[in-house]
Image (cartoon, rainbow, N blue to C red; front, side):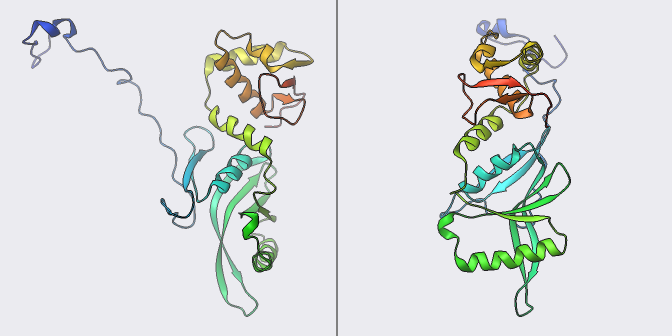
Length: 247
C-alpha cells in the first residue's frame, strides 16, 4: 500500500483494493482533427436547413463544415473520388460585376486533383438554379479561370447526384478507419485471389464477417479491388483485383 492511500473501511470493497488501473490511462491522448479552413464563419445552427461537419484526410484529418444535406452528400462523393487529393470548403473569391463593383463569392468546395489542377464547385438544389444565378455564376467562373484561381468551375445539384456512388461513398466514410489485423488478412487474400470473385466468398475467409466486409470495402476504396458492375457494394457484388492501384 502506497503512502497516503487508506484501505477501505467496509469489507464489502476489500476485493477492489488497491484500485485497478483505468483502461487506456497510460495510452497517449488521441489527436484531434485540424480545424476547418473555411474562409468565412459557418453557422452551427439553422432553422431553415441542415448543418453539420465531417472529418476529411488521413490520420486525425481536418474538419469540414457543411450547411446542407446536399453539401454533405457531395462532400462524401468528392472525398472518395480516386482523383481527389485535397478538399477545402467555403473558399473565397473576389469578382467584378458589369459596372465594376467588387463582390465576394464563396465556393462550396475547391478540390485539388492528383494532377495538381484545382476545380471549384457550387452546390445548389436544382429548384433554386435560376437564370439569374446561372448568369452570375458564368461571370464568376470566367473570372476565376482567367486569373488562374482555379482551372474549372462546376455546378453540383441534387438531380445529377448518383445514388449508387453516394451509397458507396457513405460506406467508404463509415469504414475508413484502419483495422490492422483485418486489413492484413484482407491484403493476403487479395494477393492470392485471381479472376472474378463474389465479395461474400472473400468475406467468408474471416471468422467475423463484419471485420472482413469492412476490410474489403477499404480495398475497394483504395483501388486494390474493382467492382465488375456499377452497383451498391454488398456481399453479392462481384470484384476483381486491379492491375494498377489508382490511389
